[in-house]
Length: 272
Length: 289
Image 1 (cartoon, each protein chain N blue to C red):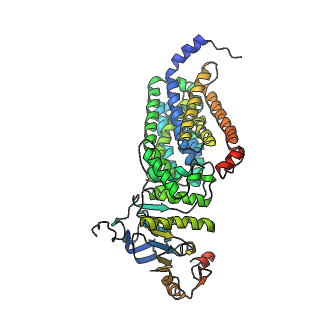
Image 2: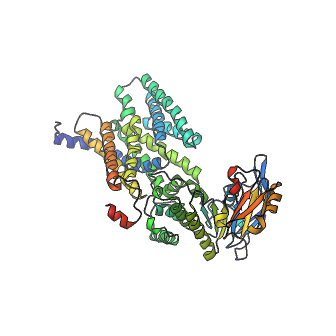
Image 3: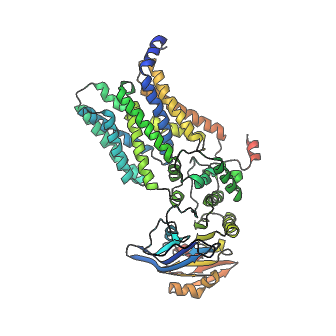
């Protein structure tokens, strides 16, 4: 066992050593070493079924790895880590769900606390500050179900920042948003890591909306992976080597498109 | 015209004082737990639990043991089965669909075998609060208070898990444990309700008030408060109205509860102006008004 290292600016916020993910006899990947430092933006790319979300769940302490360890702030990952913020993908909210925008953020602030549900002034002020920080204050009193996907995801960002996280884990947060809102939400996340040196791990099937923000890419393919700067990874020769079959990475109009990845379902063509 | 003899009414009121207190507390607890029943989409589960609770109570009647205890045992068995086997909504509904007629049939069998008065029999299906004796009333009250206190303690994590389970889990809220605790609390509430309003009408106190409150508000403070008030008014109002006539209490409770729901639906139309779209800006909202 390792001894917990004291948290300093130099220590990685997140480190995975010898990580392996397996479902039954099927191993998705193994030997994964990854260190994420404060303020770093890591994009996790790959087709469906390559274990992107499971990797994120392992960081949240909700998924057991077949081998290796995940350390957050120098300690083994565990559920409910107060220094982790989590942003899920946007989902349909049933109309009539008794939740307004500000209530969603409030759940992030005090939803885990037991005891009489009395909202303190400090909680209220925290929620107001979070809402203001993501520009959601003017629609915060509307029922969540009546808000657009982009508006909901802004609230998700506010919710994830409730405990001033050192690590922000994002699971397809831009899915089903239009381009305008994709930019708005990803800029919020990027601003957070620039202003507060919050490390970001960003799972996505499309790297383009965050291409200008990403420091490193973790690209998961079938049974293999590669890590590096976007320009080192998103290249025809690198991905061809990763997949073991010719793959073309096309750069056009500032976008990256991967063509010919083998395991791809049809929308894999726009994977990265 | 129903004529009410006020002297007699006052006398009756004294006699049923304890029943009124029990009904009031149940109205409050039912209204509160109903909010979570709606959030977790478990209205059908409430009905399923109440039928097994009825079977338990009928068995207790037949065996000559405490009916409330029998009702609780039936409730908890149903809650456990639904909680363990029915994690997903679709599975849950099929399991409840299977359990419900079985429980009801079992209960009817026990009642058929029971040699005592028939008034006791139908009481379990349609309500019998007035005929519950004092020790049992105390037991009902104690149960209600236990549920109330437990609900208040787990309120926020339970709401988090009900409304936003993925993030709640990431934030360390123990969804599985909370779900089991909730099923137990729901089972206890149903057992109490079966005694007050009857197995067939439990939904009037455990679902209708919360459903009505949700029509007129999305506030996490206002919805439980309104639901509580609606439950209280239905339960106590039902008893007070029934005392003046010769009809049973339950139809009064269900009718008041339903009337409140109808009014809330009408209010919802007024509040939202018939449009489902929200105004984009405050200025537009003023114009729309």
